[in-house]
Length: 259
Image (cartoon, rainbow, N blue to C red; front, side):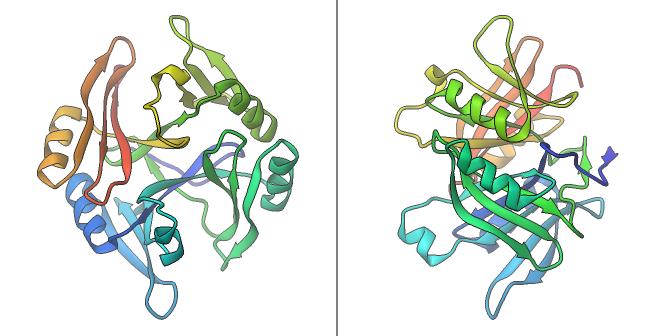
């Protein structure tokens, strides 16, 4: 286990579930990952769920707004990237060809954020931390560990993110997978466009570390999940499985070959 007290600029720092059934999602993820739940009121009827491991923040969840559901947006995981200044990041994203879906705004005293859609279509959030730095634990079952960008145009996406966050893109030795490096840390990747499922909108896929991919996938299915990719071992990489929770939010579980 490693405690995280601060995320550097350009790092993935928060994952947040937007779901059609918050109660059902809480039941699924607490059973699957052993997350505990802390609730924060967000108004007369809504609550924001913080998922915790060992008393440290690991993820969050909320019920999707009626207008989102009316647009046909499915349950999904949101991905946040830490920045020094959310307003400046949003402005720069627009200059680089992105679309600011929600200009920077304060989230009470937790921090300041903006919602951005990059040129190829994937949506993400930028986060300027105040009292909430984001994920505070890593290296144990149920913690965020990686993210892949599914995009029809890796080259355009890579140029955008490098310009916005200063990420370095490194091509794999045996394929066209682009490894994303933030400073000295490898944090995610961009698979070749040929690996995408036709008709699926561009998106970020979040990964959670588990020590037993096969066992966790089996348990997830028993809890109502859909298995899109059964556990698959990749030489010198690790074992991965892609699944969707009972409400349809897609995520991956992963165990590194080096751990």
